[in-house]
Length: 292
Image (cartoon, rainbow, N blue to C red; front, side, top):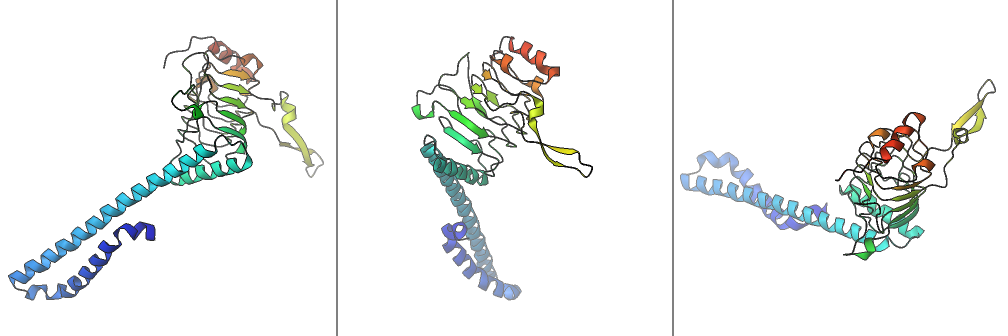
């Protein structure tokens, strides 16, 4: 509570001291002469002015404090983004959660090296509008060479996230991603242009997605799904994979895949698609990418 009233405590004290006699004298107001009535009304005006100033100061101070806290969390992410260790991962996750509470998800992760992290299990629900790589940066070299490995974006809001950005067939020092998971994530409007994306943990045979864990009352085995394709149930509407380099990406069960842009993408012959969309996706990849 003190951070809220601290900047305006003097104005609040004076307002209370002025309000007390004003309330006491309120019943006597009809008996005042014209001069005293004028003084009484002027006192109410002073009280309201003090109250208004207190509110304005409180709003300003809160905005200033919020801005400083956001900047501090972002600076800490920049400090730890190249560490590539467990402590750094936990600190970065904590910074992201605190930024989310401050209403900020469009974080610049450019140049981060991140391995073995699940955003979902770290209670991170949204990275909407975040940036991981926009290609070669000459102004700040620390923002180059983004690497993500065994990073799980399951059920995370990734709308309009720029994972990688490219204006031609290569995103120099852009995103290199390995074994990324986007199960049930919202990738609407996300951008993977020019990214190098590979998977070694794929399971080509769908029967390997399940495991017999128990039996029902009649003795029949109960099968539980223990593996999900990388983009299963992910919303790919408006997602751009232009010029991306794929190696065994699994798009089976992905949603709105025909509304994603694969123009200029390579390595799709190694990837997995639902049969009803495979040919259309491969055909679309041969189309000339549109500017924009």
